[in-house]
Length: 134
Image 1 (cartoon, one colour):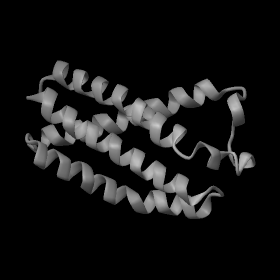
Image 2 (image 1 turned 90 degrees about the vertical axis):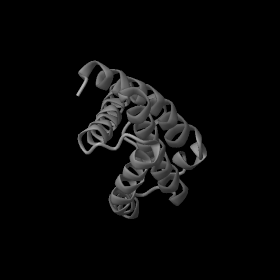
Image 3 (image 1 turned 60 degrees about the horizontal axis):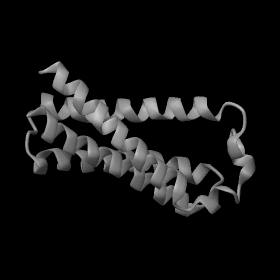
Image 4 (image 1 turned 180 degrees about the vertical axis):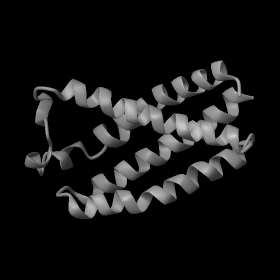
């Protein structure tokens, strides 16, 4: 594996995923977050919000790295193959997202938006793996 290309692919996917996170998990249905302010650890720019954003961006980038690494290790070098892996991983994660959403007090549209955000992250990682690793 070319580790320089891997790092470039992870960085590209991580940056792109931060924008899709902003869209799907921040902008879409923003008003629905305000319906349950007691639910959020740091509401409305409270102390420590930057730290939470940095940590979640790190987790997002790690998930991108995992998909890119898997695409390379199991020789999924075409868009079709890597996108199938991304969708399969997203489907595998849906029960976790659904369980969290059932037990957490927030609007159902946020659950849909967050799950679509994860799908976007996985798809971007698959595209980065195919485009930048070969």
